[in-house]
Length: 329
Image (cartoon, rainbow, N blue to C red; front, side, top):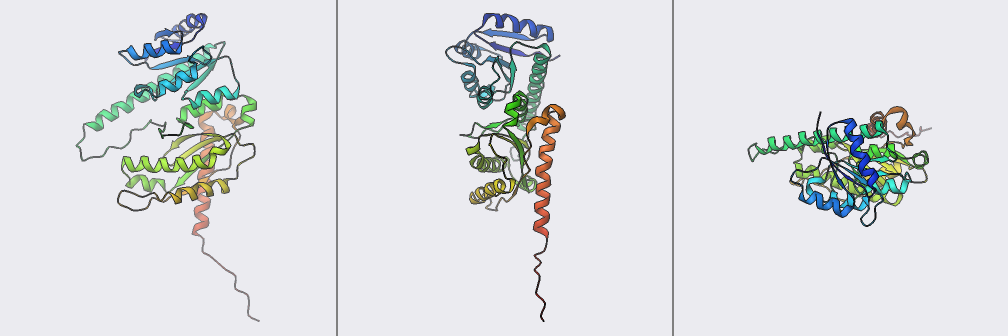
């Protein structure tokens, strides 16, 4: 079994005694304790071996767990480290703030062993995934300098300056699962597909690919920001979004606005050749099906709607422009 180095931060001494006991029943992990955000940062600073996972209580005096989460996410070694927020609160506003700060998951007090085991298993999988990506980086570094390495799989969390609404796909799924019934009713989930992105990716360098994805994300952000949203890059050129808009979004209107902004940005390769894609948005779905389908199947259904929309748009564009000519009497 993979041994995790875990930092648990809570101002409640009872929780600090309880969590290590519960973790010990699940597996053999190294658990370090801290009673405040400032103590936690001190522990992180002097650690010779980086932590693999964090448990942060949301409500703490001084620096609360959300502020601590934000601070830790700014540290280079912990940009993608699993951070699980601990709280007795289930209000959507707290959940939103936690995930916007960079949380990976959310666990409610009192703790349930099944829930805690699931969180640790998730953390272990993410750590192993990160280690594999790091190994890939090392392997690519050994290549000749004129060979450009592809971006390793598994780095799903985009880092775009000025945007805090972009999550990793794992965190986005956990956010959906953390929503209450009322929170789900007030949310809608949909995907946007950049049709033609595969052709762009085949020609692009890593820098060009990163630049173009960022431009697509900024265009989506500009359109969705007034409604409130979270987003993750699900697959190359496919983005899953969650919006809190009070009315169901019109896919044609939204995709048209995103397309216009992207076209205005005039994205080009380093050679000057244009980067062109067609944006397609699938009809939104309320996230109530997450419990029935499971998050993976739910996301696949959301994405399939965007892909179907892209196919339909392409079909319309291929149809000849046929015009009826009136009969001559």
